[in-house]
Image 1 (cartoon, rainbow, N blue to C red):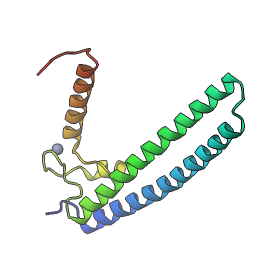
Image 2: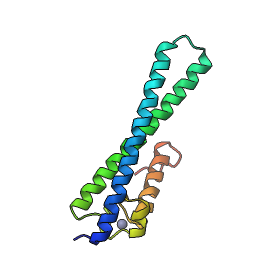
Image 3: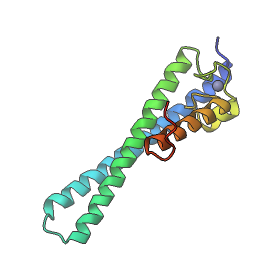
Image 4: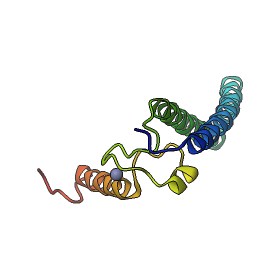
Length: 138
Ligand SMILES: [Zn+2]
């Protein structure tokens, strides 16, 4: 029982494909820059420390960007699978339909606004409990 009509499914599909393509271009660019950074490190092992720190930082930023892009690409794939199964636009937590306006902004959204903010709240509490700030223990 899909909550989305055909036109909405088509719109989401198009948004997901567009996002996927731009992410793939992005990943390609980051990997190109990582290769260049790798070359610089190899060819200039004796550079001064400030330069090395700078290059290391660039490498970390590029790596982080690739990780984020790949994560989003996976989210896109799973959104596409959900749509294919007729589960697109249905909140994974409460089973209600997700506002289409929300899906237009974030086509990979898995939860309705209410469940998303609840999930973020829990994640925040868990993170602070783990870092020992709010040891609420269960
Ligand atoms: Zn929900």
